[in-house]
Length: 268
Image (cartoon, rainbow, N blue to C red; front, side):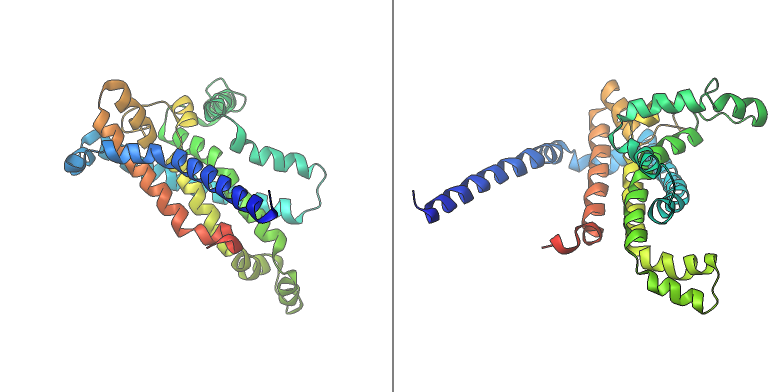
């Protein structure tokens, strides 16, 4: 077999494999669109449980994103700029939620922040703060799984930022905080924005850690993914499908809007 023929054969095999992979990814979405009750979409979205889950998810996911940004940006700066012993261990800990099963994350949060947890018992006794099975607990669970999505792009942005601009600002008399606020953050802003949007989408879709740590109390911890699960369990199939469609629409929109921020030169 000649070299051009081998190349054509390899190209055909690659096309077939690519088509199979694309079909494998697209088929569940096509099935979801096929079973969506389009004529009753507005009615399903207006159901008290569905509407309440949407409102609650919006509140908790935005709050979790704010927590993830507030904690993740300083941590990313430390990982990118500070010469600390054990920095690899700290980075690994920051990225654990990416590979940890969400349910396990919820169990770990219970053992740490529950009423009898490592820290939670003192929060309860000293401050009267009880996080499990509360809306605040849902925010904590979502922030836990969303944090790495802020840390990863932020660390990369802080590490690759041109420090000559920071040095120039210091020579002009700017202090450390001013340099960070007026120079470093604007340089890293595209990556920070992309990380925040990804963190929000991840928080919005979080299920395992939320239901394990915060439960499924209506109006308090029943977020959209939890409501999807409860809908399937109780036979409210159409409501579950509609909410699933909402989450898919949000995910696809986030990927399309922020695509250039993480693909860079790979964009087509």
